[in-house]
Amino acid sequence: MAQSNPDIEGSVQPIRIVAAKKESFLKYFIKNKWLYIFLIPGLLYFLIFKYAPMFGIVIAFKQLSLAKGIWGSEWIGLANFETLFSSAHFIRVLRNSILLSVYQIVFGFPAPIILALMLNEVRQMAFKRISQTILYLPHFISWVVLAGIVINFLSPTDGIANQIVTAFGGEPIKFLQEPQYFRTIIVSAEIWKGIGWGTIIYLAAMTGIDPTLYESAKIDGASRMQRILYITIPGIATTVVIMLLLSLGNILDNGFEQVFLLYNPVTYETGDIFETYTYRIGLQDGRLSYATAVGLFKSVVGFILIISANYAARKISGKSIW
Image (tube, rainbow, N blue to C red; front, side, top):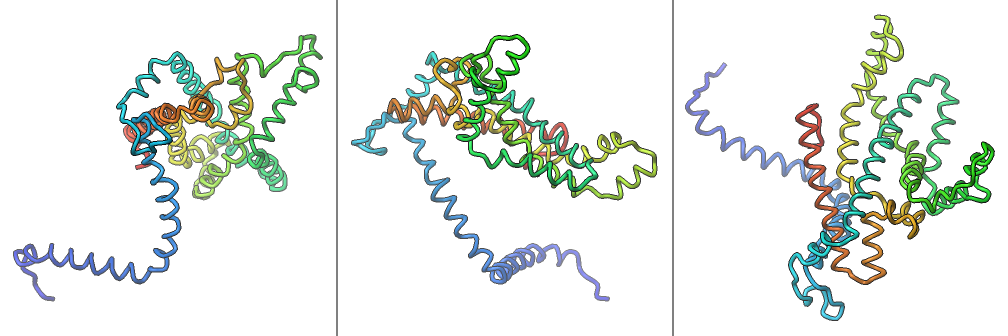
């Protein structure tokens, strides 16, 4: 066996490693060139439709004039943001957006996890498949149709909810015209629409758990609940953390359709959120610069929250997105 000189190797090794990496990457690129060619349409899509429109945020710092165009309009600095923070609607919109998001995280986030744990324990495959199919169906219903179902369900004249109320001797309730019921209606509708589809992610994560762990637990006498607590839940913990981080990043993103289709001026006090507020001032009132400032503020807050949540998750549990 040939003896090597550490001094000589220490002087030439870095140069050899750099040359080998360049050559290796070139060979890898040529070998997989078709994969990179197939990647081009996706990259173009994101560049054209996702990154190029981001230059439009400059109108948040301008007094946009359609006659002068974006670049010809006058710069006004942070005037739109000052108007937003001093607006009488700002606190109401911020409060409603945060409360709706918190309710969705507190009540909506655990729902598909609990449902996935229950479905995972079902041993009758026919019942399991039928249940999954029925639970997935609301995901494929558009918010327009689903809002119609909710309106009919809560109708004060012939809605099922009010028929139940009157059957117990109560008076019919105008649910969609009472601000105190609006958040409950929105959160319940979102849970109903998304709970079945959300279970797919967690059921997929459960399939990656080693089956021998369950067999070993059975031999050791572990009950079904103990297997869920000590095998299934730790097995999907990483997926749960990632999904929670993504939910926190969208804490001010409540969704436009469901709120817009179900709210009305009577329920603005509890239903008006950033999306609907931006729609009214941007498209209906024509204040595009101000609406862009509102959207930019929401995006910056979401970005800060997801960075903070990712850092906290890494410190607490050792699991994070990056």
